[in-house]
Image (tube, rainbow, N blue to C red):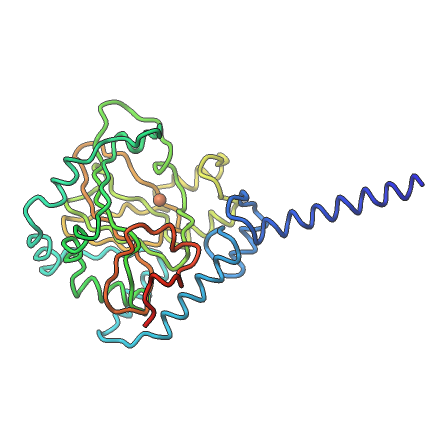
Length: 316
Ligand SMILES: [Fe+2]
């Protein structure tokens, strides 16, 4: 009898444990990532810890976009492989990027940023107390879209090997604080954990260097190594991992003059930086592949995360 109870107890334990492991592997998103899941996902070629179902859906979506792409411009192979290898690409200002910047209505982003309030109502987040943010609506996007000139469009298509759409777009200003801030939120090393085929494009509106909040990123090889050593949570970092993360021989400051475009995969380890001297103004585009050659703007991206095949995105 005693043995039977012990047997059932053990059986129950193994049953529960198996369910728990399966649950963490496939479902749902808010299960905290653990090292088993992260390692398995990376072996499968996924660079985030969202659900398996979501990753497979996104992968299928990416393949669907690749297969429907008829190239209209010449692919920049050098840019494509540099982005794949490093996880970022710094595209310096050109006559075209300067021209489109100058063609925006005078003070377009500056006025929106001046009007934007600091802080988020009901959220105690130091990051937003010195970072202004304005999300573009559809009308404003029609104006800011001019920053996506032929050169930039061709660069993005070269990265994806597909057309693309804009999930969200905003302008932001990093303001030097009056007093020292504790590092938290986006100032800590982290990965955004977005669908793998999403990239961010930063368009610097003023000269940006390490003194005014140039973005910092660990290239793909360094990010991979640090993930393999167990990095998951920005708030739970061992001293040995911290040494690697803070090693300035490993990470890059993505600096550039006004008109520089930064393309980066935000599933690599990166962090925002507190401006020390001047403000930094930037326009950010969050971009995914698309079947449609027109540049659509989804305005708010969250609902497309669950299913990028949503009927709101016309499929051509
Ligand atoms: Fe981030």
